[in-house]
Image (tube, rainbow over all chains, first blue to last red; front, side, top):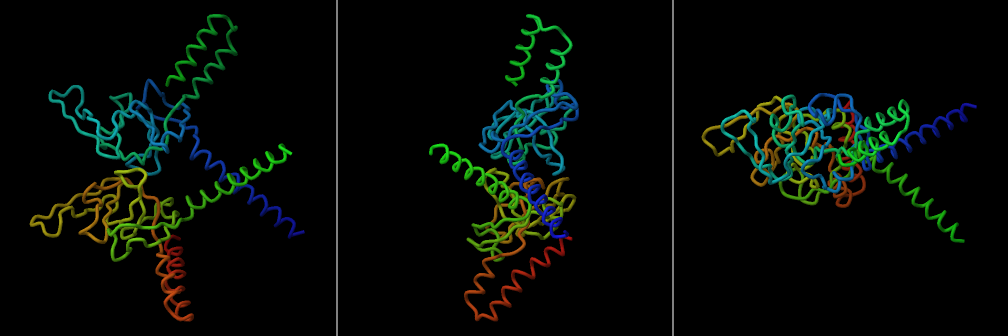
Length: 178
Length: 180
């Protein structure tokens, strides 16, 4: 009796570990959903937006200028940050604020990237902590899931007419071009 | 016939993916063997030494000053470096070389560590690229497995057992108690 219970428990634990590992590898190599908080990427990504970040670009080193990336914070290893890539290694970036009289520039060192938030007035990014190593990047944001939830709500409430279909097509193409 | 072959192939691929994922998670959360190359950690770790680096300390943020760590290189995301932690966040570290007349110091910023190799004359470390973010650290080196293997091959049986116990099991036990 006790043996049967122990056997079943061990089997259950074994299955949990097995599928936990597979899920972890899926999140590690394919992609994951991320809830963004904070105003630093407005109006592109608003507080509490859900985005999908894919991991393949980071592992294949295909992150490009203009991509929005999720990276580990250089100040806190347990926090993640969501910023836009402004410069890759070797690029010249402007470090002074737009109101300064004399512009200062710097070159992004090898193996680093320069990140900035879209909401420049309210963003702690490379202008404060400097360029961050490429290895801190976790993934590239490829679509905003909240937009799809909004489309579903529009479909439910309004009658599907020709004008609404055109609006849906425009919204969807805007998300894919993200 | 074709269906059976396809079924068996898919089953094999399924098992490979399954056990590959379990192995990957074991390397990610428990530890992995690393082959070190380069002279920057001599005489502690020589070129081509095999070391075991455990991951739990990094995930639980228990890396301490004096630990030897494996970290991702800040210059190349595909390369790893093996250095000793000289300073944690907030510590004051000396940035000038021993031959300089005037000593310069710097404070390690929040969330960063200062790494230096044991072979100071032949090591590219934080003295060149500055402090690195803690998140770049992969694991802590806890034992050198090649030393135990060398001992087993070169000594008599009893002495080699004692040597192996002293150099492999005891550090592992000490590591586990340190981390607790």
